[in-house]
Image (tube, rainbow, N blue to C red; front, top):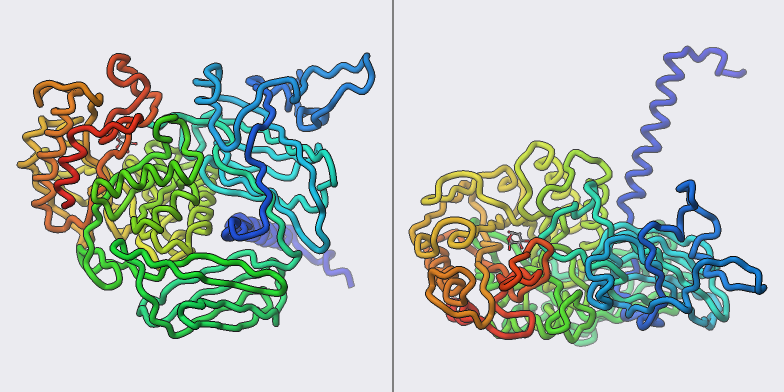
Length: 604
Ligand code: GCU
């Protein structure tokens, strides 16, 4: 019997609503999934780094026709003339070239201020291997990427500082593959970050690109960590297929640990074994070889074991109180400037932080490269990792939220096995509003659902009290575990010497980190300490702010702004700034300023 005859219009409305809800939640669930191979460096990778051929395309002529409709014969086809009468008005192989990884702004002075589309093309041969899948893995592209292989769109990605991958197995050919990427770094009001930032909008394929070859059935993701009671090593391994009964082995040879387990019907295996590893700590950043195998795949990671928690206004590392002696760092390369593009440059910056006496670095204002996080961990530096929910993004816009949540999910997914990372930060200096509170509240819930083993924080402004007494009472104090506060006493307000009299009151029984303070100086410019831009003025800002910090009994750390001068489109004072924010303790040419030693003395 056909029931439809008896459905009333009201019934139909209910059915349609239910169907739409189902679609919405399925969509949401899928949205939360980020398929990302864990620890690609340990896999069978073929690098695509090096010179790529590029076409600078400010009007996106390689993508839209003159009626502003996407064209099917766009630059992604990498066409060549076949007959002398062919009309083709582009040619990758006789145009510009750019290094990958790298921003375009510092590689070609015509691109210094460029914001728009650059088409990148890389040709390569490929030796197919039986029963293997191949992914193209981008460590970062700023800001939007459309990726094509041999003329076919394989995927798109938004977000300038998080990795992404596409399965290209079935599109690869033995010779002359051409990978084309449409990179667009135009700033957009609804983006994350939005149109105004105090850092240069470096565009390009700014981190490495890899071809990753894995068995058809492979280990896709895993988590290995110390349990909160510090008596077990626990975690999970998930395969690329939802199949139960697959054998997984997790071993830590140095601990004589060899755990065998099997997957459930989701293709995921949990484990928890008694263990007493040497704990990771800044004084002894012990990392263990962890070997994971499934089928005919074996991958190795280097993992540290530690716990991080709070007790009242204290931060506890491995159950003991710790003060985070930090410094903030942008991903600006020393000497050459532009984006950091090598592990060596990461080590230079992190060694400068070690020279300061740091045990902590705030990697501002976006997820830095995996190299940076791994090098910090090896050097015993605790890490504050952050997504670019920065200043005045559109807190009412659902797509903006989805973008922020996806960047948060990817940041946590990539670095969840890095013991060095102790803090996830969901925001920097976000203006108070109900929309902002619910936006950040949702991000906080999401972060905790992805990782309940780290502390949650945000760099906040103070909104209450007076110049004399700052009061920490803003609503995000309820949500985070650790309250980050940015405070520019002696630079944006008050004279430096007045800072010693500023007192702080915290309405939350939670630790506070002074996540920014400081001032600018041109390295080598000297004068009286009341003369703006002299090293002496910056030294006075540090001296008096440090006196103020010493009186804050709920202070658990600080990450002054900032290790090194960095390029910003907001810094126009030609004789001093030359497009650089001069709050670095070190110039971009590696020269220390007097305030470097003031902070170093405090950390001693
Ligand atoms: C802000 C912001 C930084 C900025 C700094 C400054 O607090 O968080 O991104 O560079 O202050 O004004 O120099």
